[in-house]
Each structure stands twice: as structure tokens, then as C-alpha cells.
Length: 361
Image (cartoon, rainbow, N blue to C red):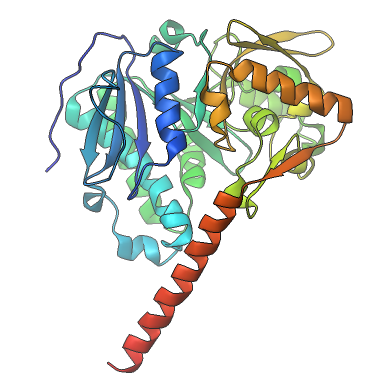
């Protein structure tokens, strides 16, 4: 049985990171340290699987409270395994769906009135408008395209909304068990426009022309975006500036690639604007007639340089390099490649042993 915990501080809006699995990777630790040291977050919770090994120590990270979660009480592996490869990337498909449920179970069990959920690879700028977000009355997450929404940044304004959303997530999954977490969120948002809003995405300054979105569709998306100044990135701007996850491409980290733009996957085109990186940990996005602040970046590559105090210098250096060259560039992570190869062979051997065991039953 999960136990409730008591908050350690009086920060108005608690931040919750959920990371499920057997081990916490280094980038998660660096992300948490970044929130504490750069953003001065004093009310931070990390939700992990019960028994998970973690390098986080309460003495060195006093602002972060760890809450152990029994994910076996949520959605069954047997049902999830019928539609998703549970061994892919150490249970990636399972954990992305369970992450939403775990967030809501944390909020409900502990009686936390409202929470801001971040995926561990999200970057908050120093000027993130906590107070403006905290007064919103609807659940908020990110719009990505007509088929999928993004749960990288989720605001849940009340316990009653948390209970309602948990039921919706589980019911939606049961109706369509082959759905991914992004498809589940999209289904709920489509059916409940009166309860779900979207973060300001940057459509007003960087609409993706490859998508050929109709004006009514663009206006429909914008009408559901909360009235907050600036841009709250949940994927495209971060993938452009920080690079794409090398785990998705055999260890290759692609920076400033237009793959997700030209294939119409993203409604926003981050390549059609200019960027100004401030020494005060701020980013301005400029088009010919408009300027916007960006308050979050999805560090899709998990590159730990962007969790340091010098991250603006690193981003600016990469951006200037791209401007000079005019072409995307990529780097290779041998460590990521080796991990992917190891997992692949481990899966092959495990499945082979299972087949042999069945043969002799």
C-alpha cells in the first residue's frame, strides 16, 4: 500500500517528476539538480518504482522528496503486453502510459491540491510564470498534432480533476489498449474540450507550412490554448535546439534536423524563427513581426549540458554553428549505441530461452 507523505516546504505549485523502471539515468539526476540550483525549486517530488535504485540522497538534495510507487497496482503487464513490446527500451511503452497514472495517484494519495508534472528531460527557464499557471482552472498539456498530444508538461489544478482524469486515462486505455500515452491524451482532450486546455505552442509565430493546416484548424487549436504570455514547448523547439534522442537513432544525436518538420509531424516549425539567448537564462524567439519568450524546452536528446547553469552558452554556441553552416549536424554517443546493442542481444537471448523452455514443457 502506498503511503502519503508530507510536504517539506510552502512553495505554491509543487513540481512532480515521474520516472519508472529499475534505475534512474544520470540525466534525471542532472535535471533535478538543475531545478533546485538554477530554478530554486523548493517543493519537488520524484515518483519512482518501489525498490528502484537511485543516487539521490536526501542530504545533498533536501528539496526533493522521493515517493515510492507500486506500479503493479495500476495496469496489468499481461494486458499491456498484448499490444506493446514491454521489453522495448526497458519497458518504454509501459512506463509512458503508467507515468500518467502514477502522477495522478501521487496527487490523490497525498491530497496535493494541484501539481505541475514535468518529464525528466524538460527544462524550465528561470522566468517560468509559476503564479500565472497556478491560477488556471483546467487541466493543461501539450498539443503536438491531430493524432497525438504530449504529456511532457501537465498541470492538474485540483484533486477532483485528478480523480476524474485518472478514471478517464484508465477507461480510455481499456477501450483502446493498443494506444500510446500520446494517443490516450489526444482522445481525452478531443472528448472533453471543456476540461482540457493546451499550452501556448508558438503557432502564432512559427506555424508549420508543411502541414498545410487549414485556418479554421489553427484557430481551433489556438482557442484552446490558455491565455498565458510566451511559449511552453513540449517537443518541437527542444528537438530543434537541443537535438533528438540518440536512443531513437542508434546513438546518433541529430541537431537542427527538419525531419519532424518536413514530414508534417509537428504543427510548429521552429526553423523559421530566430533565437536570442540571454545571460539571465532566457530565450527570445523572433519572427519578422513578433517576439515571444520561451518558458520551457523539451531536452529530447537528454544532453546533460542543458541542465547546467551555462546552458544558454551551450545553446547559443550550437545555434551559431548551425547558422554558419546552414545545415544540420550530428554527434555519436558510443555509450548509447552500446546500451542499445546490449538490450537487443539480451532480448534475443531471453526470447530464445523462453522458446526452448516451452519446447520441453
